[in-house]
Amino acid sequence: MKIYIQKVQTYTNHEKRLWIFFDEFNTTPNIGLLKEIICERTLLGEPLPDKMVFLGACNPRRQKTTKILQNDNVHVGLRKNRYEMQKLLCAGTDQRLLYTVVPIPETMLEYIWDYGYLNESTELAYIKTMLNICKELSNDGSLFNLIVRLLVQSQNHFRQIEDASSVSLRDIARFCRLYNWFLDSLIQRDVAKKFKD
Image (tube, rainbow, N blue to C red; front, side):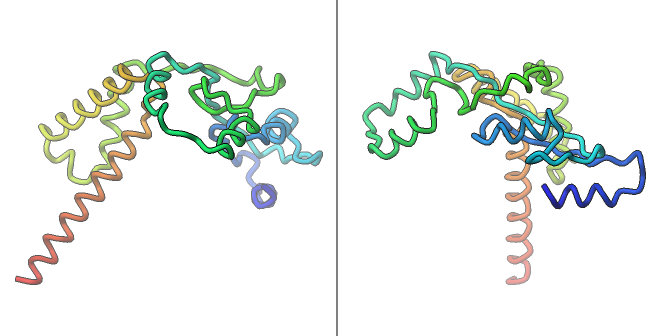
């Protein structure tokens, strides 16, 4: 954090801000320190520069659905050793929760908004936009539309068998990375084959 404080202090433009994003901030046992930074705008009692803007995302404190609990119980025959069980108990991990989260301090609650989930048309628009980073995919309209439909079906399938929060646009980003990796691999193999011939 000291590096960011020093960086902000070099800003001469009064309009310039440094945005700092804390992802899944309620998964750390150090949430009290994050509360101090975000709500009190101090770090270990020292004031933070006004040009620092803090933003974060937290996981909901939700119980697992019956479907997910049943899937968890599929592995009932697997024994966890005592150390693993003790570690989970000491960490205060509630196995019934969908995410491993710590309670959010009351002071932070006024800063939290629940945006819910994307509706179908918005998710579709995001997927189409994200697929634009897939090299050469948009050159073939029918393949592009097929991939879009398959990804939408995949997201819906996992929502049905698990839970609405079991899918994420991160899955689409992972698909794009995998697609680009395979495409690059095929191109490199083709080039290597031409040099051999």
